[in-house]
Image 1 (cartoon, helix red, strand yellow):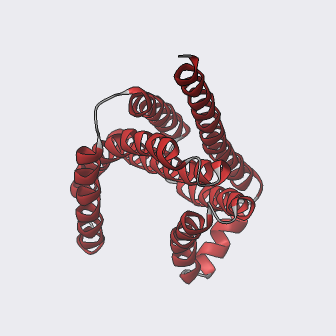
Image 2 (cartoon, helix red, strand yellow):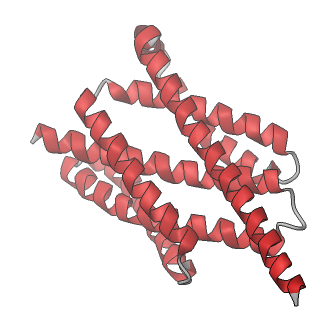
Length: 233
């Protein structure tokens, strides 16, 4: 009669350890991004802007490199956890440089408000996704489809250069990433419970940290655009 109880305790302890490791690495990635952005803004900002102006093509490299790194981390996380962790930290540093370049277009108030808002939304939805018994997969799949459509529409708007459309798209993106944050949190919990005994817990934690970090980054960027554009009106 005690074996099922003991097994539940072991599963619960393992899950708590997994979630702690995943969210710790995600938080570390956010801190690395924030630290890199701070150092870049206060020590290398002029050099960064001069370099970006002189080498306009490098902007595309900086924008596309995170996509390649994210794909590499996702592919290798369970095969090479140590290497994937280093790639995650490198990704966080690259985003920190991007944030430093973006910061010149926004006030300190905009940045602070965006960070607080994205943090509050992320924590709330990640907690909800972790504890809820409701299956969020249907909402998550709809959000992914909406995200693909939004990316296509955003590319079109790059040629239209409509500030109003950008403003509306930012609100839509916030809603999408609110749903994706909860779904990713629930999904990683389910993956650990189903496959945690077969795969590296460290690898799964890195994979989850990556997904949740990207959710947070996108929430932050969208809130930054919303606050920045609102203050200009």
